Length: 165
Figure (spheres, rainbow, N blue to C red):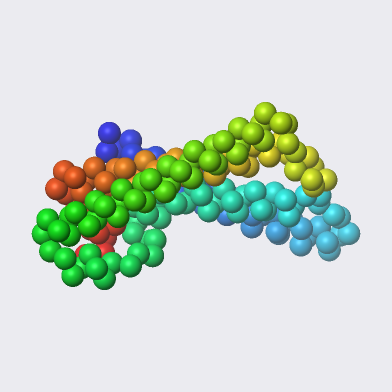
């Protein structure tokens, strides 16, 4: 299971990196197109969709690598079981918040799908497609949070704390 989860987080991070590369290629295509008076339609729309995908798909990988900004002053002042309790409580609160986000972004994407909403650019894209990247990214992030929560409950060091040390 550990191997599968690590591959899931890495794959999500790699997919986020792929979307950054796609944004770069779109910008370069626009620059070269302007030299030859060629306008590429909806590049701004797709760049925005890809930026959202990058942001949400990178959440779990960044969390597992200790890249998120955390205020750990209180946790470092605590020792032993009290520190473990504070970490577990913080993770539990965060799990509830992200689960709320997963539920409502899922409902948002489903609503866009059921009403057949389209983007307003030159190329009409069903909005549920770019919204799905938010749902997938937040779901993988939720799994990463639950993963670290289970580590704390089992007496092990959560990944982000281990990387700090």
